[in-house]
Length: 411
Image (cartoon, rainbow, N blue to C red; front, side, top):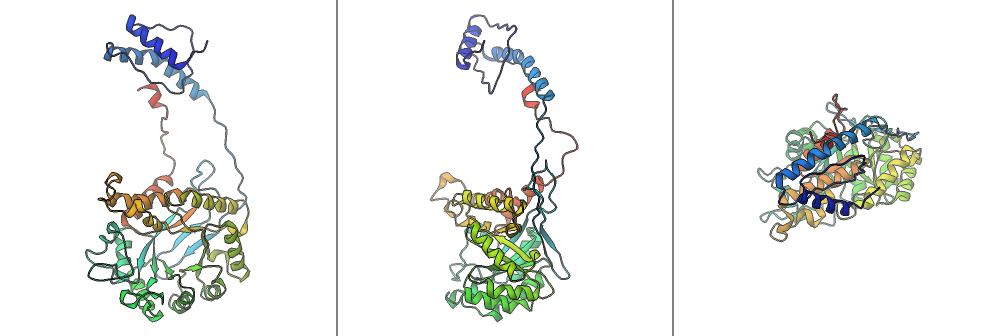
């Protein structure tokens, strides 16, 4: 007969109290979880007896488990994600996309390319008390680049990211080109100044570069048109094109064989529309990366997760307008108060030096399991931490099977 678990354990405790012995015959245990609470008087002896008593049951459970067969999981994904190759003339190439299965579905097959990291570099120095700037970064980030101060030279900044921290690519954000920002803090820079900064980065590193605009639509078109000739022969990415700007930027990308970042704001239908418009203008499928927008951990990650997942599964199932690799500004995690708030204001949250990087790592990781191919990151520890996770998730199957039942046999 079956017994109520709590009632059974009460009876078992009474039995130990009275006799110190328990003998079971012809019974079956169906255990979901088991917690032994031997009486204090019995102490170690009772715990030892209980363990010995349950070992035959555990061994039987092991036998039943090993003889059971798990159903084979089969899912049909008839399409593939387009392959995108970032090219650096005389340097390194970086490949993303090409997936045939959802991320890390190793039981179905292995995808050809793992997620990669592009590190953020800016065209203005980091703000300090002595040097006002439009670029204000959290202390755990800026301390890596202010001692020594490489933020005044984008080339040195990029070199540190690549050579010391292992970034696969560099995103050079031209935030200083925004004409609405004050010149005394680094704003309203000319395209000529932007070209000088780009030249510094290209001379310093041999990896592909993403050309990041300021967000000012008029100036971004001018910027992308201005840098296109300098980057000819390479295949970089213009970041980004939107529904308001694609008609002017796509022809530049098409002429100079450059990738575009198709950016929308967490809207599947708008993403399909923008991608369709770009394709209709004749840009090749191997020159489009999507950025559905990142709502970071605690500030919309669930919605971002859902949008990334829907886009990736749609692409794998044959939706041509969504069969593109996905990028994400996981740096947005630093906009969450849990990442940047000072220790003295929230001491119970733990050190900010750890909180910020962890927030960025987890934002990138959560999205990578539903399709993020290119993580735009800022903190060196975040870059290293995320790449380590991807390395382990992408590792080949161990030659010696892991004994997942070891805990139950109490060996």
